Image (cartoon, rainbow, N blue to C red):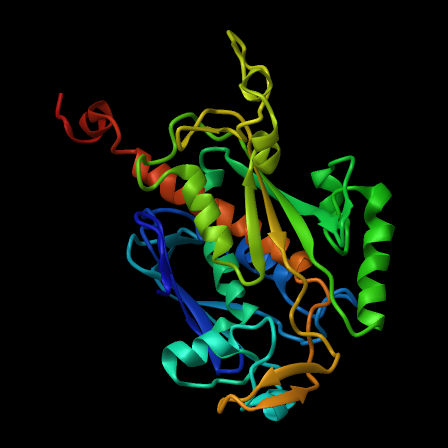
Length: 363
């Protein structure tokens, strides 16, 4: 499937080494100002080649809007129809993968894609490449423009690299950090871990912290489209993500009810172990999520594998790859949180009959 969402819905297309990638977004209310500068800034945060902590692949990731907008009074407004964007690939080096075209790279989706479809698109992984996440960031930028209209904000940063965890969380600092580090005091150690792995032709994993602020009570559609379930769903749909925690996450299983329960006062919740979600519905507190990325499987060390005929062999990877995919993944996770919230926000409009009457009933 290439489509996500119910009310705010997007479909992505394209391959890593194809001519272009793109996204079609449905459900954007008419009259939303489509701020192309903001959308491009979001894509620039994710784009590759900005530092030594990322792949050296150079892509401008310039988004071109193709449909769903109309210029009026000097503003680019959504028309209520499908909003579509295209991003042309500019720096493909498919020849870097020619030595693995009949092999399965350990840790990649090569083996399972070939088993399912019978086609071996060896050019950087084709559709399974993380290149596709630029489309998700584009959709997330549009979702953020919707959320901005009701003062909902989503922030993110790197919580952990190679087991080095942040102690002091500072989302403002993360904005200026080349690796989006949340803790200034741990940033250098985290950078060094990435550098050491890269120098050893290896890679490291990491964890991303995402928070959503000023989320109203009531977002989420029980029983089968719960807010926390959809956050986990969309995050686990990212390449290299192996675990997602909401609130205290795993720690909650080691706690006691008397500790884990978020007691309530007339001024609100006294703690936030739940991560802002109860019964699959937002409770008005901050939504807190951690997303865990495995080490980038693309490493420059000889490894054992098999070819498409199941013959044992070894291979040595060439190409350009992120030594820690979690770094740019933090921007994608932030975008995906915005997508889920925009979808839930629009779905929630029909949850009460008075909402329908306000729009349609004549006085």
